[in-house]
Length: 330
Image 1: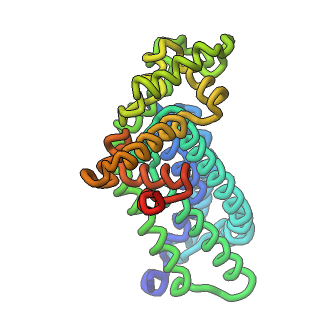
Image 2: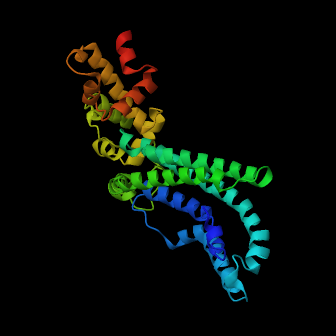
Image 3: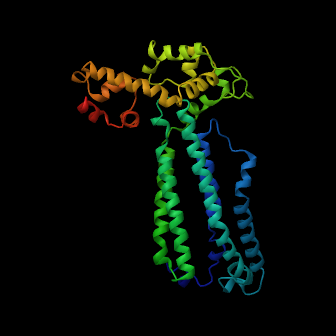
């Protein structure tokens, strides 16, 4: 950009710090804040930034030392910047940053997919809670991380890459950062956290230290019949907002009991269990020629689905056919 040619004695090199060691834990904690009920930044989370804080402190210390040396104002880099930082520390950080980022990306993906697994055990309609934009961001960021790593290897081992070749990564990273920033800003995270809070034992009157999925009470045939009657006779699945707590209250059970019945007796997660009844109701309405009066989406909504995307995906999963293909074949 011509900075060094214009300002021959600039001290900018002391403050050009790779923030990967701070970005990685920030992304992890941001995803954690979205997928954890009533998330609060705890003091222990500062440990995630210990490496970044130490590195910034180190840079400031060598700047302070070099600034006290004679002739510093007439040069770009002082003695420690050249003989310590550029000779050893930057190379060491290059080896640290890649595995550091990789570990945090792995933990962030794990955090996100654990959240996905959790919501299908509780909600019957999960489309608005799936946070697909987060997955898009993580995939893009992961790709850019790999691209940046390959670029660094090529630049250090094979061809000297200047700013003209490297700026594409900076531009793309800036766009991805703006994407997640704008999308995150306009996402109603309060609503998401309230919905996620439904996982808390407090919401159903269970002691906080209780393990809601570790019930000592065995499953009885009567309990299974109760749940089946709620779905087949009372048609609880028609409520598009039906969740595990709602059905547990209707069955006069704890949600731990109900979850065990659904998972064990019916061999399904809660989401598949409820949507299975909705799909069967949809098929029954087609047999009654309801599609001559309503659109397929209209029928799906009558059966308890609350989005076209969820309906199409669930129907395809359970029948191996799209709703339109099923109608043509039947």
